[in-house]
Length: 289
Image 1 (cartoon, rainbow, N blue to C red):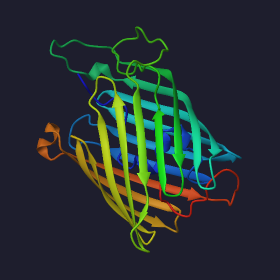
Image 2: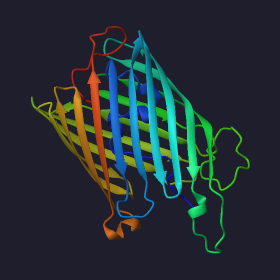
Image 3: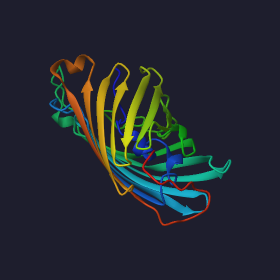
Image 4: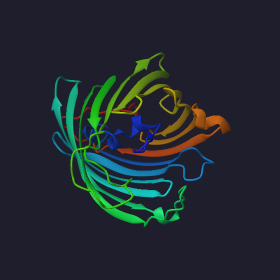
């Protein structure tokens, strides 16, 4: 079988910390983000994901971050707790390159006792924990960004039905994320922000996102997103005082699973706080990326 193992998001471009540790510190002196996602509403056991993250700038060139991700899929529940650290290199007046490391623990519980099998077999529910490491790189300036990351590098036992072979080892099916985005000023009040994300996992179909967002008067953002052979999404956000973002997305499934007009919903809150710190960081004046 081929299935989604890690949570995915539609508004990832405003919370890339969860997929790329090199992103921490790049956005603001302190960024706090909350995200809630309900996928395939109406399907029993469909994924539900909640994310809390914060990141900021510890001192010259060093960023830090902390995140908690809770995910429920069917009988499986998991909570990932991660710490991210980045270091930024100055390439020129407006160009930065950062490298990041992610480390943490994942805690899971599988309620297998409630599962139904063709042969009416009964499994015992299991729970446990396992470590996680990840890494990434992130290049950015005021008009462009590009990133490459592997957020989960170790094998996960959370989908097993027993406790056997739960050794700590590198995964044979790592997910590789490549992201990029640009900013174009169409008029004094309208900015165009195309972006993309490509996710590659061996033995799984390639996942490609194409996003087209428009920002009006630094306050209203609207756009469309297409995930290849998967879904279409509409995005809307309000930005208050260039610091606080309230975003919502509606996803419509295009696969065979969408025969009953299944949809997904995602709400995101982001708060950027700037303390006028100096150093290696670019001083952004708005929630562009």
